[in-house]
Length: 181
Image (cartoon, rainbow, N blue to C red; front, side, top):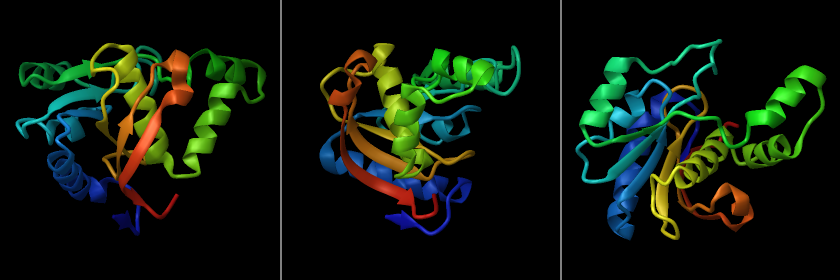
């Protein structure tokens, strides 16, 4: 499915399509980018295991956690795993760029993936992060859901690799994405 516009307006359809593909392929593990938890919340009680990957604390400002304690508790109580950590394509490379300028390997990789859309980049990134954290099984296809800001507009079937073997990641299918990049 190709959406003509990107963004939150596609969230419900992205989730519907992802759940449909999961049923078809018998995939039980979902990884979803959701900095406030609202997109992850939509996947609760849908018969799949959900990992919610948030922005790292400090993403929107020093010391700021964009997910409220109440939402974090709600997700955890419903069996959702929540991962709040440094983003795979950011970290120290971004700190060096912010301080000294230039572009570094992780950012080149992120920009390359963005040629397919911001959501595809996010999906690949969060899948690897969840695998590195031990929150999804190694060697299995999962569904990753991401977006182009707020909400979700992209879903993929991916077999992620650990970050130290990142180039072994296999994007199997693009379930949906916006044509607007």
